[in-house]
Length: 458
Ligand SMILES: C[S@@+](CC[C@H](N)C(=O)[O-])C[C@H]1O[C@@H](n2cnc3c(N)ncnc32)[C@H](O)[C@@H]1O
Image (tube, rainbow, N blue to C red; front, side, top):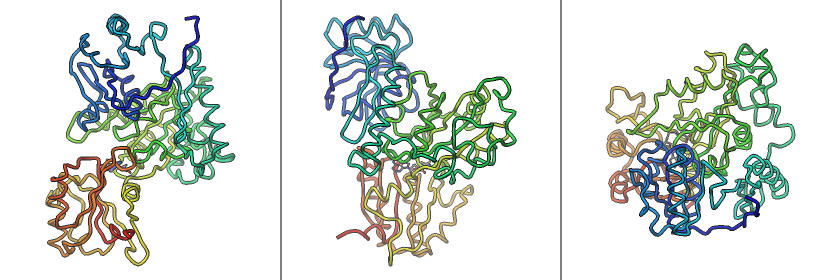
């Protein structure tokens, strides 16, 4: 390739883009296509759980088989995300015949289009091509991102999707790092580059982790809260650790655009735990974290919302600690507060609610395994925020009413909060379960019960 590429901003809204392949590369590429409003057709015999979740949510079309030429009917762009060079070449041949630009994950030189390294600052998108060298593109992109962050600041209209670099002094584990209370549990293996990993006291008992004494950088794990859905809602520290990661183990609910900006050499492990669908056992996830860290990798365990709010972060921290792997915990913006906020509902409001309670509704109130005292919750006057509660909502609301919470108490459901597909339902405790079905709301969603639901209404 001697000629320079010609840069363009593709306006893909409503336009067909075909993605061939359903593995890690497609998992990383599809979110940005959806963010651009593309009509995505995914052709692959199998999908990662994260992609399957998007299919189940009706965000894209899936053809569960290998590629056939008619898949490109009506396509404006094709992304080939398969490892098999023969299969990839046959897709590009069809694309070339039809004059459709083709991005190739397996062979950039055979592609007719390249995906740039991207940083997004509100309405501004900066895309960098590195002359065929993705690392160069990433390096320049990172420098531009830092520059824009400094220029625009976190309070600027360009917002913080560009994730400003951490303020001076924050990298040593002070400031935001002060809240990573778990760091001391597992100790820190010397002065690792994670900054926050050393925040709670330098070398701890885990210095025996792989890499120590071998000259290789010791591995580490960061449990990072990715926030509720908007990629701008990850913390500065979480973002920094993500940019430093060698391995990212991501849940289904993490914002897809965060994955789109990872370096191409980062190993992405899809640890999606889809309710009632395919899942990796928690033990397997723990083992992946430990194994990769012991092999010297900087591992980020990226979790939706906050790692410790129904996120099983505690189990992962204990598993790492037991294996002598240093861990840092970066809190995240939890959906239990952010989802109501995104719907204009403050979880507390002066003169309206002096408390809010976050509760899991994944078990029905009469389940012997439930740890929730629904009868006691019914006696509270404040705000009740129910996560994972859609399936059992009829039983939950009936129980709350039976134990004294008035049926006319305002209630709301917020689906896919802080994303472009957010939906809000306002109702009452007595009617919300039926209204939810009628409106066909689906997980992930948060249910809010209490007078705060109408507190900011004009
Ligand atoms: C396993 S819990 C994880 C909660 C997460 N750790 C947090 O702090 O937000 C998953 C539940 O969180 C809620 N949730 C997560 N993201 C959401 C979003 N963007 N909108 C609404 N609810 C969300 C839903 O109730 C979902 O079923």
